[in-house]
Amino acid sequence: MIISKRLETIVGMIESCSVLGDIGCDHAYVSIRALQEKKTGHVIAADVAKGPLETAVRNCREAGVEDSAEFVLSDGLSGLADGCGIECAVIAGMGGILMSRILREAELARFQHLQQLILGPQSDQDLVRKTLLETGIFTIRREKWVFDEGKYYVLLDVRRSLPGTPQEKYSEAQLHYGKHCDPACTDVYLNYLNSRREALYAALESLKKGSPDKNAVKSDGLKKRIELVEEAILQNRREGYDRSFLQE
Image: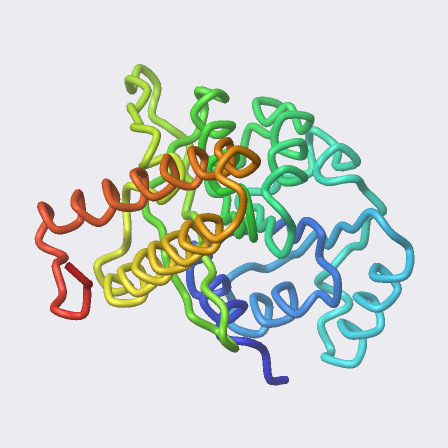
């Protein structure tokens, strides 16, 4: 079974666990590969729609891992029982607004064995990071950046905080662009920041060709977003991640 670089990276981030929750499992490729690579002995594959769940069942049967998987019709984690025993949950392939809602409604504290979350928000990453901080239960240990089929993806490796651990502080720029980039992904990460800066400047230049009065609010918004990405680039330069391909 051939899977994307993004999904391969997700599987590689999974710490060995007894029970893995594949939330929004879709085709269940992550579930299958995790079982094949002995990352886990049992998978709970959950999806909100019957169609994808039926596909997941079929794919697991064809891969010969059906006996090590159970399939649950669930909106996020809400349909999973408190005592299901999941130790790691993968939630990826959806927008950040939906992912944040899933995290808020999951009542994460009820999953006593849950030690790791692997999150792959495809938009609104700042909202996901903010939601995690607000739980007071989990913290982002590292972020992996992947360039796959012409797109940039961020994957958050989230762990349960130790009792008494103070809540980590994030600046606005860090909420939008992250704080704990895995050193192995530095080049991809800085390429992403640079591409975002270029896109924002291009959008700002395009606005200047229109009516100044009509575009004033949009222009201010773009300038604010440029400030944030510039701050993220500067922060990573301070941390020794500077690369010559970053534009001055």
